[in-house]
Image (cartoon, rainbow, N blue to C red; front, side, top):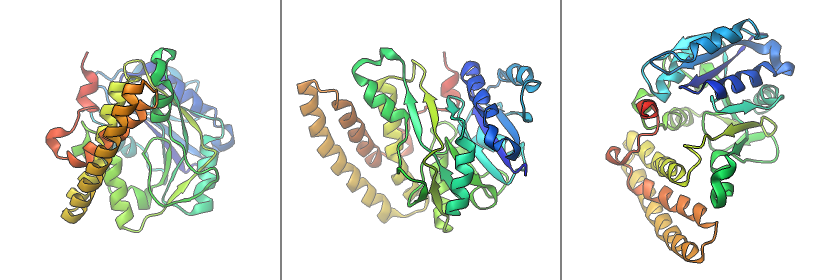
Length: 307
């Protein structure tokens, strides 16, 4: 049953991409389920092509190279999907490495829950030089969840997920390319799935490690992304023209920013490491209030090509 494709979008990360691919080659327990592994190269220069060519002869499963030269996170995901017709799609990011039972655990959880999308936990890994922010950054780049496999009420992010293509990924390009430069393409996808009555599941044993490079493992970068995450609920409501929902999220965000802003000030004065988490909650609240496009940070796509 070669019914699963693993899609790995990538942009100029050859070393971490190789680590991700080799972790997929080690999925011995589920190897006979893998139809192919698609590397969606989002670099206009096609920098991932030599690595894919080099690993093709070593790979125990078919490797497919998909060029997606217009930089953008949604464009890359759509290109990966277009390169395979597998009915089940697993997404792994190029800065992640899967544990040996990753895919088997995702597949087992999908059968157990009957979910359209199954998510797994992530361990955040950051450089030793991150100092007092280490604990916060490991949490930020990681993802915790229930201790046991089972259904979820709400979706998580695309990285480390398994999706039933027919129900979760309709059409030839299910990811909205309007989110190419800002991210949030999975928010829109899952909002539409939820509106159709989609179901979500959790695979407690489907671990991956996410390795944050030094230029991302900073408080400034994490807080910028946290602000963008905060914008998500308000933007999703606005896209649905649910203006009452927008107003509700803005009120929630204002309350969060006020409460956590005061906590941030107190923790800053006391020089407590916990202030990083308070900063995070403050900016997520601000994101719900300042959800308009003019405030969107550019964190993906062309922004990643700048020196």
